Image 1 (cartoon, rainbow, N blue to C red):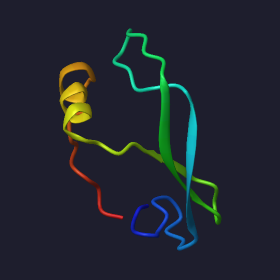
Image 2 (image 1 turned 30 degrees about the vertical axis):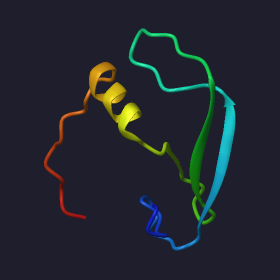
Image 3 (image 1 turned 30 degrees about the horizontal axis):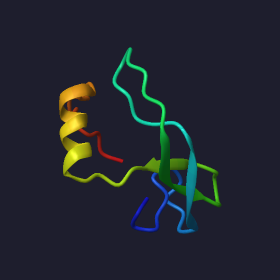
Length: 78
């Protein structure tokens, strides 16, 4: 959606905002609460919303060590 097109309806009216609050990324079963800012992309056409977290080196390392990786699956043609 960061290219301006909705991943669901393929519309081109995507808006970006920031959400902030007492929340954070955590691995399954772990507890992590802190003040975090997320970028949110919202399609004004269908309402689909996608959260985005800027990833720096430290956050990337944390994700690789603590979060379960979803294995890539073959994509079906649209």
